[in-house]
Length: 286
Figure 1 (cartoon, rainbow, N blue to C red):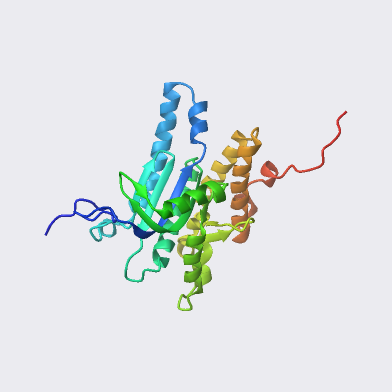
Figure 2 (figure 1 turned 30 degrees about the vertical axis):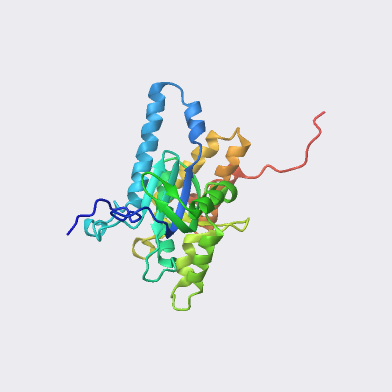
């Protein structure tokens, strides 16, 4: 039997690159250029590089299934997805199998992967923004190409705005089909991984990952505490910059909404006075 030269699911040995209908995510690490500009001195820059590299490596390991048992990681001769990264930009494609072809299973799996990835990055102090699409794509170490890239990139740059991963219309259509299927039991339970925001956007409810073993051991409050600390740190760092502060205020609001939704004690929440709106009339100080 001929050995497989790669585990990339988009590559066929001896074949020309071909588009595959896939779930595709385009993600951007926020603040990268600002960190580089603000970090002075080679030693400080290398320290930041180490932090970012460790965070990306650890978070990507969850995507790669490094946290799973060996027998699951080695199951089959191909990976479930292909990932390409260039420091602050990450592209991930999950090819849709031919057995069902509707993409529902791949989308649910991808959303779970992305939720875990996002939580791990935030806990390390790196916030991300992105979008998920469903369409044709090809992903390898040389190129990322297809309409799903255009769709997801537009979602990341035009719709996401805040540190959230939104679903484009193509992804929403697939998820809606999944939720509307009569045979799916516990549909409401399985839809917890996606929330709808005030502006109507559907986004990955990544904090739901702390409830992955809720019935067995309860919520992982230590993970929630790390998330709270990371958000508070950013609010303090950018209190002088209204535009950037607003992005982390969104995350603080999301954190508290999640706590309220699940009835967590007030001690798990972020003090709303720290990020509350300061809207009001203009006061004549003359």
